Length: 115
Image (tube, rainbow, N blue to C red; front, side, top):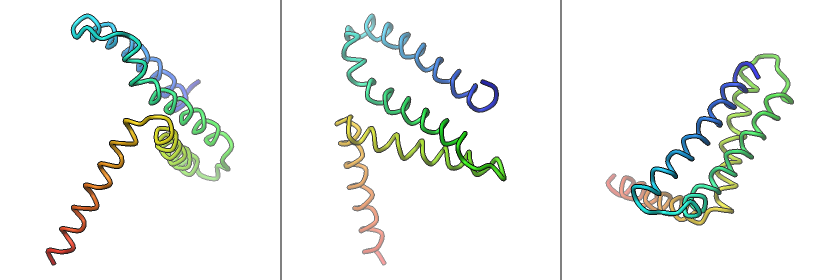
């Protein structure tokens, strides 16, 4: 549990504690229920957990002539897996990603059209 895996595990624990505190404060201040928080943040938590687990496995399985390669590979796997999982299980993420892609496409078209 030393090194990057320990830091990641501690960060995950802090994120869960932060989520519980935010849910409690949000419920008290805004009147929302716990189920609504879990419904909105649950898919991201699931995706992040799966992506982190895959990154840890990749970090330990990757050949390590240099320690940089396994870290880069684990990072790429983690980001890609997170995006893929969120795309399939979180409609809010999917809507936001599609909106962002449309905006980027329009910006690129305007840039190319301007010369």
